[in-house]
Length: 124
Image (cartoon, rainbow, N blue to C red):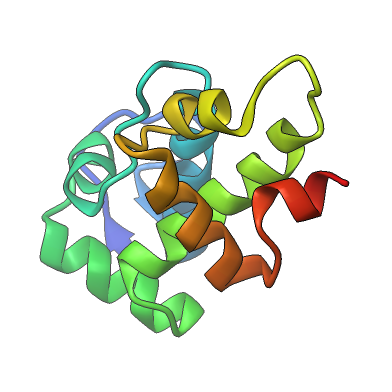
């Protein structure tokens, strides 16, 4: 496994970190951002937060997960959405907005593509 030199001081990783640490940090950022309105869970945002170029971040994610960076980020967002959907005090629309979707229909479409059920079906 290769390592990358990391010049920033990011909590949880040493100066030389492996790609799994980058994946862990990326997942942490997505989780933290999901509580804000709206979340900025894009490749550009996550790579910038990790002080990596978008291309290098994408290459790293692809090498370690086999998924393109956007697909990996979306899978993490859907994982968070699965937990939020069970909060009956929030509508699916509210969950979508919390996760950074401008249009709830896009959230519903992505959720159905990834999970196989609409958010309402998953909640039931």
